[in-house]
Length: 150
Image (cartoon, rainbow, N blue to C red; front, side):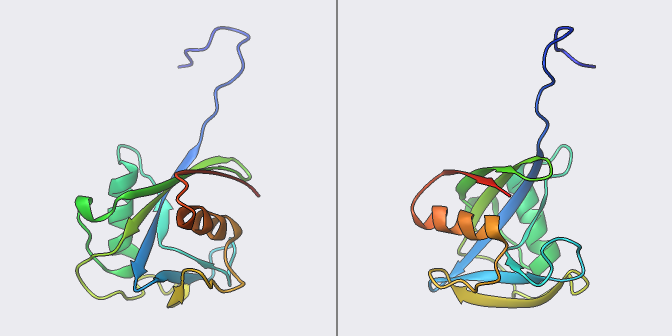
């Protein structure tokens, strides 16, 4: 049911995702997308959509386990950045930083990711998903809000 007055413009609806910046000794964990139909062959970070009834932080915790097999606590994933992204549909991307976790990082989704690697955060590979590269740069600059148009 819409709460807009008749003739009022439609309100924006956003897809919401949570991204995790795993940081270790000045390096960030990257995964190379494979067989997904979006940016395959390019590096991103562990991420996923926020499910109905789930917070962005809870999605980050869930995705950390699902994608790279590690457990993180709510107090181990501080908020880093929010990005308003104009893509095929408007999106809101939350980025969290994780420097402590339990378990060994491993590829738990080989059907979607063909490589995990640690890369120097200030020397990312050229084949990065563009908005993720932008978000990492904004995080390094200390920004808490960013915009990106695909």
